[in-house]
Length: 119
Image: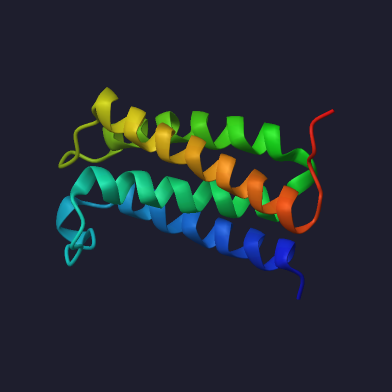
């Protein structure tokens, strides 16, 4: 299995987990996290965007923008759960994580495969 295929599968699974965690009642959410909540959010989106960019290196810019926009869209899903409350600051933390993940994924693709070079 190629790195791109493995990364894409991991990205889709991570996206499903993030969406589940977002719309599920707060008591169903994983609670044994040792990281501060904002770091946890940023790290989840960093991994998500990085995995998607590595999974689809030829469309890295579209994927990066979609992950950043998705951070805001997924945070808006909190409106579907009575026990959750969306906050714009949380969405920004997720978007920053997605941006950093996309940059890391792009750097990985450029360094390892030479795909996605600008110019």
